[in-house]
Image (cartoon, rainbow, N blue to C red):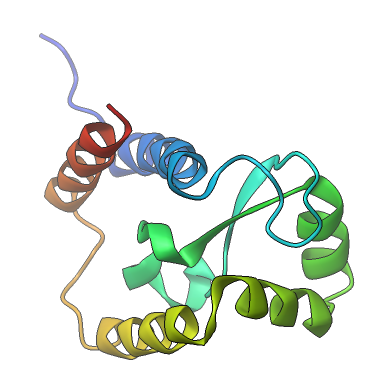
Length: 126
């Protein structure tokens, strides 16, 4: 009998699919500098906004330098401002409203939730 996938396994699969879907939606160039993107950055961090973890509008394609060095190592606020400028004020206002809505959301840490996310992302990619 085959073992059912764990939440951890499903979360990793959903994270990989979300990154692929973000590249499909936004392209594979860095939103900040235009170099080839290597990662999908969560504009509102996963730690404070699980509700937006798989929302493609919250995912921003970035190159290694802008993602790891400028944002995660240096905490450069100008880089985040460039993202906001490039995506537009309407994008930011809508995303901020969704973040607030997410604070009231039901539990997002179930096997059923991850299976639904995976199906939605696979459908988007295909």
